[in-house]
Amino acid sequence: MVHPEWSRFYGVYDLAIVFLDEPFDASDRVQPATRAEVAPEEFDLVTAAGWGLTSDDLLAQLPDTPMKVTRPVIPIEVAQGYDDFPDRFLFTTVICIDTTGGHGTCSGDSGGPLLDGEGNQAGITSYGGSQCTTGVPGCFTDVAMFNDWIDDQQP
Image 1: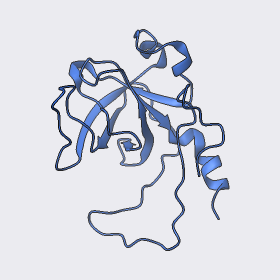
Image 2 (image 1 turned 90 degrees about the horizontal axis):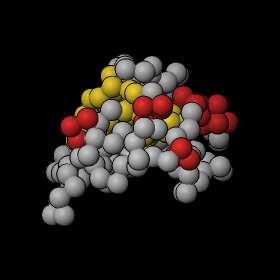
Image 3 (image 1 turned 90 degrees about the vertical axis):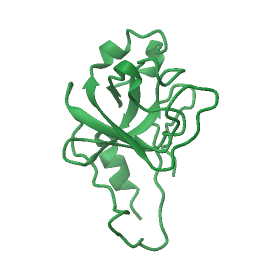
């Protein structure tokens, strides 16, 4: 179920819920995510993970194993200072991270988790700059902002 206010143009409300007919079997490699109750604070370290590209190189390939990177949360006002982000893309429903040095998410990481320092899912990879390694902030849907909506959708 896609959030009813999702907008492809604005990148807002970028989340969906998948309902399973049967519970899955947890293992050492597959675990349910625990949602963060509150968003991480500015400058807290968070970890993004995914299977996306590792560079902007035209010949870049997807990794064989999931990648992860730990970076600090930055204020939305800092992200607004980048030309890649017109104001329409930055809402209070996102968490932005510093990707200085090209360390962040890339094409193919969308939908992946952003974990807080306690391992809770604080965000969902949503968007970033037009290139991954330029240091433009990565933006994630703030899961805590949607906990009530998620709970209301439970069958």
